[in-house]
Image (cartoon, rainbow, N blue to C red; front, side, top):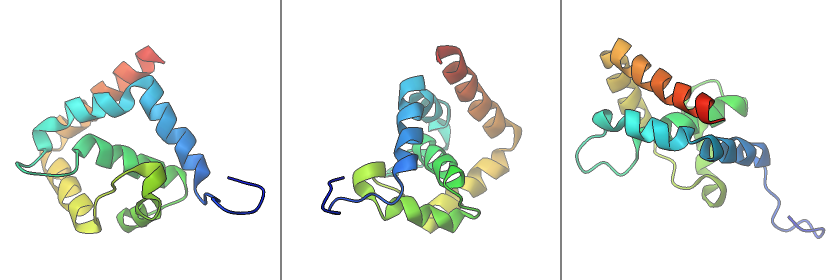
Length: 115
């Protein structure tokens, strides 16, 4: 940001969350644990998609399509998948049920230990 109003960031609070994910290793842990749900030739990492959704929820989003808030600021949040990509991943994770929950809990536990 600058005092002339140029470079204003609308979702700067999300950057703090993103950096917390990085510092605790939760981003890498989610990527490792959710790798089995990555489709061949997929561009987006399932772990990053889940992390992006967590940031979106913390910023006040209440449905999957609210991830567009992050998509609108790629300089801050990097590549963010389309709504259909997010929906397909969550359909796959929901179908996996307890396996997906265990994977997410394992990633969260390792990040908590590191923090």
